[in-house]
Length: 243
Ligand SMILES: C[S@@+](CC[C@H](N)C(=O)[O-])C[C@H]1O[C@@H](n2cnc3c(N)ncnc32)[C@H](O)[C@@H]1O
Ligand SMILES: O=C(O)C(=O)C[C@]1(C(=O)O)C=C[C@@H](O)C=C1
Picture (cartoon, rainbow, N blue to C red):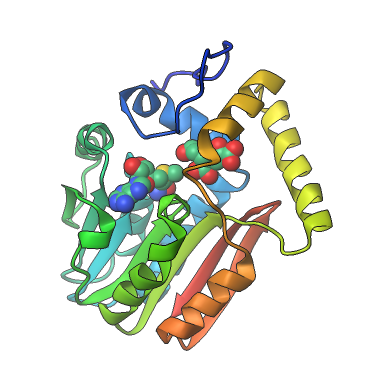
């Protein structure tokens, strides 16, 4: 059973930068479901998109896999494809340890390996599908172009990158509307004003968000032939780029 997220419920004497430590692992499924509008819709749709782009004898990567929710959804999407392998990567040791226990609970013919590693150092090769589900936003902005380029270089022609992110609207006025809608979503899910403001302070230095235009430009610069936003709820968007 996942615990209820109360990490920011009491006034904290000082707010440290948010990180994916043991405390976060314990509440993670509850935290992400109550914080990210559309998270469950994105996971529900992943198998369809994966089955459309997966290639036989190829690798599928889940970069920043946390507890493996997207890994499991990807596995559903490649059940009919021969000789695929899923590689989940996360640089948080407590996340990977819990993900291993979590994945052991699900039987499948598709091998899934988990590695505790910085995704910037992960070799991407023979990839048909690469998923970055709410992970690129935690990578320093100056490193993002190189990461997307390395993913593109390791992908097979016809392969797909599935990127979901919190985004910033380029029009500040419209951005305020989307941020307010997101905060109302958090309130409706039981987060207090204190929890919302302390969480915002904890993520502001470590989670810098790009605009959709930044993401689309980055895909184009890397060489992707096609790209689109396939889902958006407030300031959270899921994108698809095809090589
Ligand atoms: C919001 S969570 C991802 C959620 C997950 N993909 C899902 O769908 O449930 C972000 C994850 O990225 C991981 N992460 C952040 N920076 C990373 C890096 N440089 N290399 C690998 N993993 C990273 C964090 O440890 C965290 O588990
Ligand atoms: O933007 C926020 O308020 C969030 O809490 C977002 C967010 C995310 O997008 O990953 C940040 C950290 C947690 O992993 C869960 C949700």
